[in-house]
Length: 531
Image (tube, rainbow, N blue to C red; front, side):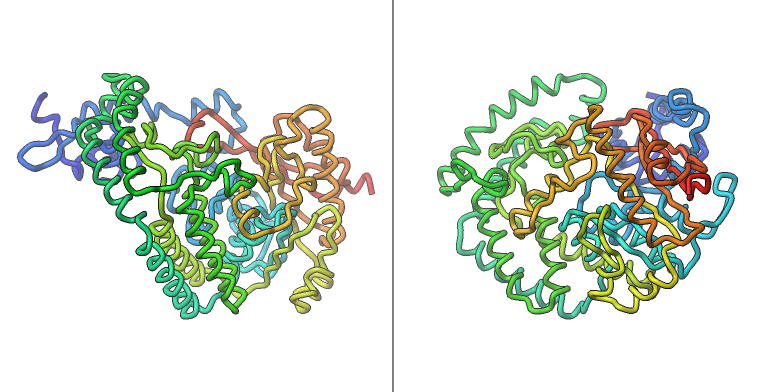
């Protein structure tokens, strides 16, 4: 290799930025090395990369994704609404990553329509500080959080009690001294419990065995580079090494007498959590139940939920979509090595308690002094003013006199997600009542004609009920990938008309799906002709 072709990571950052016409950081280059996209060159204790290889990677990967997607999805694609300039840390900023949630939109999309800027596509201002915005499918509360940042009052409604809990925890103000006190106490109880078991020693031994094994057979980043360049068949190689390590794991299980899954499971918790994790979650939840301050109790319960979600007995690649419980060591294609199930939740509990407080405090500095209401109810029938009056009479009076300026929401997509089932672990642990039968467009109903008709009826009924509380000149924004062309009928049934469509590309929709994909933000107003 030509010596002039080799550059340091810092030099590669500048060189690639000039090549691509956009900022490429040293961290971006290190990521490419770590995940085997380009080769690491080590000389005299320093790390270099090849300019030729870097150029080849960027030119093949970024051959005008904008033009390519427009060719697939149409010239009406508004690329400025891709928000590709934002890093992942910005699209999950502060409380937006307080708990995992499928099917949420990024905060920048909400901000685009709620703030007071205009541009070539958004030619007028729809909301101003002091207005009230409604999200009748509140989900994890993205609209409400962004409204609080922008000085808007907000109301969110959802049939899922757990969804409402997530949203409410993001918007609540907390006594941080009390939070820290309770976290410290619960963590000490959890640590004492672990000391009384052999789980810690077992896991330390297992981790050491895995480290030695993976260092030998899956050296990083070389192994991922071999995979990327098809120098190795990872399916065959991984299966061989998985089988090779299994006796080591089974010997340790036997030696430390580690109990795995419950036989004949009767609940989600029985099926998806191994015995040591079950013991720990019950112990922590028992401590949380003793807390007197309601806000502190609810937030720590949410942290526990986030923790146990990361501790389910499944592979790293299947955390989002569970397939079958897995309690053995296994070849992990995501990480390119042999991985293991979790036998203690302490690490994630510690991580998420710190992360949650940091995110809440970041949001605290940005939010304005506005009202928020999170309501667990059916948006087709809920009496908003009566519900809000139960806990905030002043806000209820504002809604009654000022009325709501508009809606920004993303209704569930037809037959895509069962919104209760995605958090089944939380419903089992906390004992919330499930109302799956009230979901609009759930996965279990499929995507057939009957499901589509039910969906149209459900969304239109939500809009009809919401109109009771809207100002006359309201603005309604509905985000959807309307592949069945249902929204014209929804608008008609609700006595509304579609006045604009903003079509946006959805980048990095899921870890496994990188195909061209778009959604439309439908702008609806009252249809005066059908009054």
